[in-house]
Image: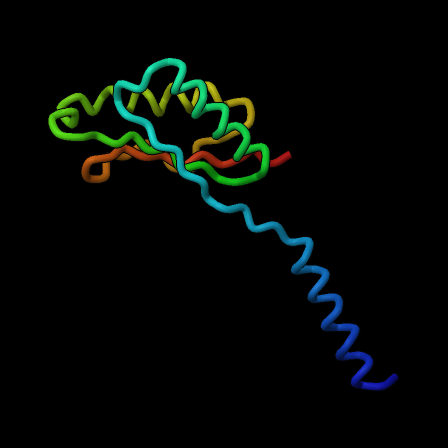
Length: 111
């Protein structure tokens, strides 16, 4: 067998393997601590679409000014989101306070 032909076939196999590889990106959805129910449902629907496309979702609750006093409301929003999306997503990173925002990462459940 010709060495050049062998190298060519090897490169083709590697290229096909890379093509079939899926790089799931990270999408972010931002909330406020007092986000209304309709807005919450709308953003949850987008998160569900991202998870169906095999992307990870970073859910963030951003506080402004004195809202930081009520950081427990931010944790409640994220735990509610995690429970609403529990059928298609698993919590990869638990909610954590980072400066003026609380964030968590949801990953799609592999089948």
